[in-house]
Amino acid sequence: MKRKIKYLIWCCSVAILALTAIQTYFIYNTYVLKEQQAQIAVRTELVHMERTINIDSIRNRWFLDAENLVRTKGVEVAAAFLSNGSAAISKQVSTYIQENKILEKYNTVYAVTFRQVSLQGKGSHLQIRNKYWFGNGNIHDQDQVIHDLILHDLTTSNDVGGALVRNFNSRSSFTIIDGRNNIFREMLGLLIFSVFLLTVVILLFYFSIRSLITQKKISDMQTDFINNITHEFNTPLATIGVAVSTVRAQLIEKEENSVSLNGLNVIDRQYRRLKKLIDQVMTHTEASGELIIHKVNIPLMNFLEKLLEDFQSAHPEIELLLKLKEVPREILADPFYLTTAMTNLLENAVKYGGIQLTFTVVENENNCNFIISDNGIGIAQTEISNIFQKFYRVEKGDVHNTKGLGLGLYYSRQIAIAHGGTLSVHSIPGKGSKFTMTIPIA
Image 1 (tube, rainbow, N blue to C red):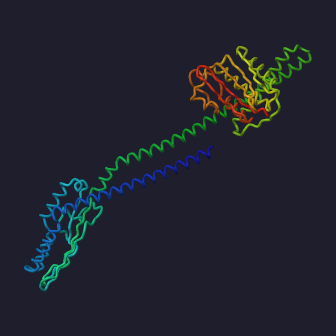
Image 2: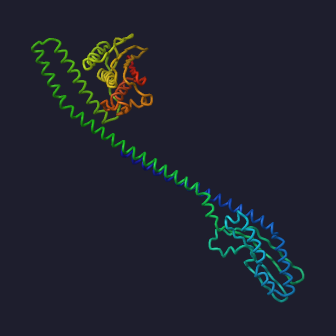
Image 3: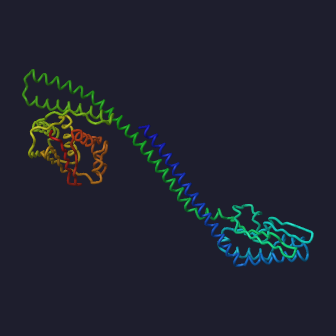
């Protein structure tokens, strides 16, 4: 059992780790998807902005202005003109981004840079590379750049009239400064739910394993208790056995009347049955194997006569009615175990309030049905599926005042199964119960 608990703990740990890995994988994929969606949304808004402020027209105008400066004032002046950027356009871009909900939400930085511009005038040549042109901020100056995302490139070249601006190559790009924070805020509910679900699973595993360990401890305590009790019972039983043998010898020697001898025989039968019962309880608590029975042909009427005589002697106040319907002459069974099962059912009926018992025996095809009905307190439907479990006892109403270990019905069903039969119950709370044991005749 300890090994099974260790295996269970190991399997639960592996399951929790696997569940954590799966949750992490799905959360990461969700984050990536939302990041892509944010980039698409920002890109769409920036393209719309460029159309709104007519960015293509701005580029073309600056291209022409730069060319005129090269021709009229030289390469150095044109280079200074390009390098200073455009404050007017940058202000226009910044205003647009601040007023746009999506671009403002993600703290978008948009910039247009000169990737490469070649200026050629009379006798001079100059190149400008990676120079900020306009936007609401220089992407490469940001401390929290996540991605430098290219919106598009534009290359224009002119080769007319000697003086020219060649390879006017500009790039529109953007980055999202607060992308992660916004995505994490959007995923906060999912993260909390995932952590909560994982915590619940861990707690369920923990309480399940703790409950299993507790049940094992209780089961071990029950087993130890029963073993100790049964061992303690053996001492007075041995004394009773010796006393019965001594008294029988004296009665036979003195030729006492049959009434005393019959009473002694009842005591002797009950002593032997109790001795076997204790041995069987010890066997059942120490091992979980099937019962080993020894079937013999039992004269049914003689068997019933002794069984009911012993029961009536122990419970003279109980009204017991025997009904026989097409009873077979003999039945193939183990007399000790069958007596034990029937006695358990009769004792159980008395234990739970029955004062009027009906013992019905009827042959049904190749089976013999033993039906014990009582007028006791009955059993609730929710408890019927549990009453045949080992050590189970109903704990409702005044039932908890009834003494017992919860082995009687469990043991009786095991006996019926060992004989190839069944044990079932039908009960109505407040009106009584009816137990039916079916045993094959041969």
